[in-house]
Each structure stands twice: as structure tokens, then as C-alpha cells.
Image (cartoon, rainbow, N blue to C red; front, side, top):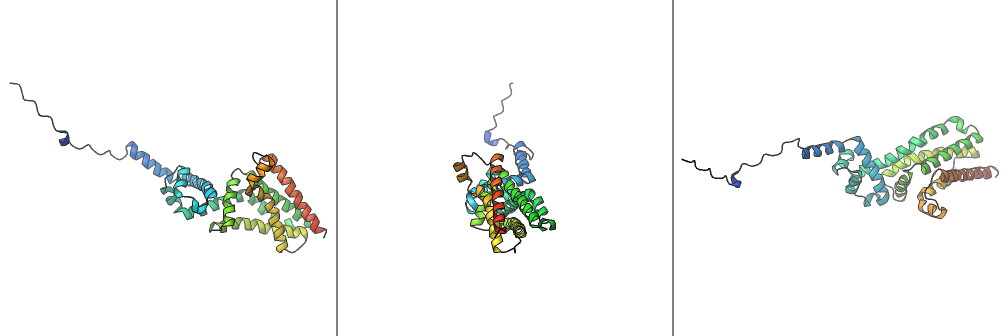
Length: 248
């Protein structure tokens, strides 16, 4: 006798599919992403992205979501590395100050030596070196344009990040005013400080008003040739200021 066929098991009665165990490709990608976002490379990418976004939009206008997207990181990475938007903003200011001091630090150290102000001639040579190096850093570094946007915003509406920026610029101004006073044989007073700010402003204007400069000069960018021309005129202006003051 032929055996009876077993009735088909209804689909609803089939055992539930087993869960995909941990370690499958989807879970692994998430894990690897989380681990990557905790690394130093992601922290650096967040700072770089934040420098651009904060510089363009300001602190209030920038969103952490946009920064994370620009960095190619999860939003949670900002919390992991910095705790929040405010701390990230301070970290960007510290990054700018750190990058500038890498390039300007050796010159600042040299011009603080006692022999830098031993004579008016020595002081003049030292301030030439400081101003020339300042021009090279502000006009020569590719990312200096982004530094300038961030710093200008802090000048207009200072936040806690201003103290970080001032810690660097204040040091440069103090050293420059000391050299200027020694070169002129005068007291380190308000007139000397104004001269120093005027002198530094001759360099900064090429970043702060870069769009105007490029259009009027017909330059595509401020390259080595353009920077050399700017430095030559700025240093000549410095000598003319010193010569005029010494003849008074």
C-alpha cells in the first residue's frame, strides 16, 4: 500500500529564522567604524573639518552634524573626542595656535635672547627677522587662509577661544614691541605698540581682505612671487618708520 504523503507544513508554522550572530559583515562594519572614529586620525579630521566650517559659518551657524559629515565621521565621534561643540571650537583655536607656533616659535625664541636688543642695529635686524617670518607664516601656509577666517571672527566677537589666540598673538606683540623700542632707543610705550600693530597689520591685510587684494592685483593666489613682493615692501616700510623716528 502506498504511504500517504505528509501534509505540507504551513509557512506560519515554520521555525523562526535564527538571528545573525555577532561578527557578521554588517555588525563588523559598525564595529570597525566605531573603532576608527575613536582613533587619532578621526580626531584630526574633525578638527580640520571644524576649522573650515567654523571659519565659514561661525560658532552659532556651524552644526556638529555638518562638521561630522565633512570629516566623514559619526556624530558620536565629536562627543567621544571633545565632549561637545564648545570644546571642539576651543580645540580648533589650539590647533591654529599650535600650527603657527611651529613655524614662528624658533624665531620668537631667537629674538628674545639678550643680544637681540644689545644695540639698535641688532634690534632692527631682529624685528626684520620676526616680521619676515610672520609674513612667511601668514602668507605662505596653504591653510593660513582658513586660520585667518577663524581668527577674524574671534576678533569681532571674542569667545573663550580668544584667550587661546591671544596667548600666541600677545606673545608676538610683546616681543615685537620690545624690539621696536630697542631699535628706536625709546620706552616700550603706547606709541611703540601702535607702530607694532601697524607693522603686523600690513601683513594681515593680505589675508583679511584677500578677495579684494586678488581682484585688484589680478592675482590668482598669493604664491611665492607675490609673497616676496609683499615682504619686500613691508620690510622697506619698517625701515622707513625706524629711520624717520630716529631722525626726529
